[in-house]
Length: 124
Length: 509
Image 1 (tube, chains in turn green, purple):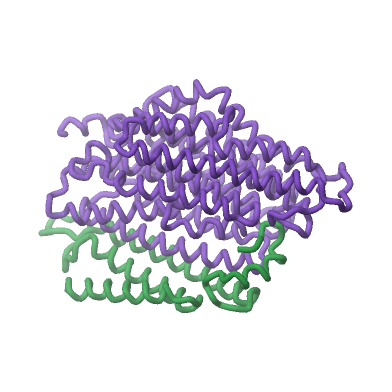
Image 2 (image 1 turned 180 degrees about the vertical axis):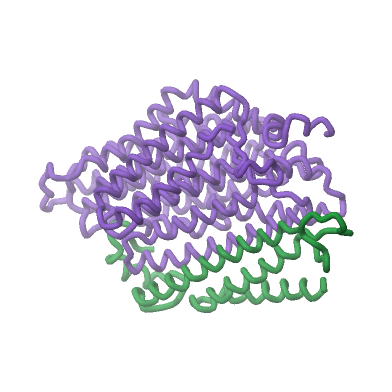
């Protein structure tokens, strides 16, 4: 089971990092999602992998599994879910406004749009 | 338990949804409540500061769960200082956003602003490392909304980058916290300080990986080289009051480094003592150099200010990286100063940009603009503060940093880099100032009428930041006295650990 979990975390992290380094928003978002899945699995395993043991105190338990990582994973899932939703909406809005879904700011792309950005914007 | 301690988090947390739900269509009411809330926060944080200054650290157990099982908030001198700095800045930013009408350019500015304050204050007060992650997320989520406030294509594009890099940073944070928890079995900072020296030799490598990953996360926030690339794009494209508020966001990174690497991986950590220093010092010095180069190369005023922020973070982190009490006093003093100077510069840059019309903030000559003399004077003050010229706090701060580096091994390098980068900053700001104010003054062209209709409040807000710098110069003695005790507390965290875990906990150690 350790091998399975570890290779799952490793494979998802590797794919996530690869996608994160792509130049367009869609692969980047999928990459971030994969990374957050990898993290959830990883956090789950930080309490050690234990099978058939209770997480709360009971009189006739031979041992325990750590309940805390599950609380941490829950928090991490909620946050990463919200963040993924946010960045999808943001990427869509940026695509509609800029007209391109490239993540990097090339010189021409920013400078021609800087006039619309109000007083805070300027050329890169 | 002292319930005042949780108020800097609860007050903005209650105010923000109230603003969204009850007054979403009434900007005037939003402004009144937001400004009143910021002033109330200022009052609370002054009270907390007085409590922290007069006694040992205090602990607040959320839900009355005893540490290390529950989450605790801890008020010591350092966190009280940071909360006070945040609320001072909050008052100024709320006034500026109102006076300059920035808050009318999009919706929900004040609600997001209060959520941002909640996140920042929470990050400063929490005594639990996973809770620190949660508050980081709170402040980041609010900052995404604030950064995109007002919309526009360039801002959207910079916003996507900002969100992506911070999401990647959050992922790293979780890996780091997970690794540390996996090795030590605790997330409470005081308990971690107790457990880290007891980690068996076989797990040391894993613990170090976790600790250094955490350093990377904090370095992203503090905009240290090589992960500073997000800062210029974000701060140039963010609305000016937001950029000013972000002056304290980079300090959240600096605070976290100072807290974690003195308390958990400090002198008592055995093999892991001062783990961060070897990596932090080179990174900080390179950051200073990059800030200087960017400052000279900047073609626009806001971008120039951004690189001066990177340079000031370099100076700050150099002082922190020395990890001695004297250097930490210098670092904290410089931290207060650079927050004021950064905020003042961003606000002034916005005022200048607004008045120059179509020329914007590009560093080219253009016809004179309204109130050019007044803004020139204020820009001059802010710039000599940022560059570290006497008589303002920048000079005192840099002098203290240099003085505290005297006994360090790398003293020569530190002195050369700091002094040369200060010279570069003077040249950069001098070039910008002469271009904006002097050369432009001689250009023929229609001068905007000196309209009295221009709002006074933005200028007053920016002036208050400068006044903060002057006050910090005048009261440098008492402030340094406070900071000396703060640094002593940081390097001997016995009181902190006793407060959180109970008086008997150190008996076994």
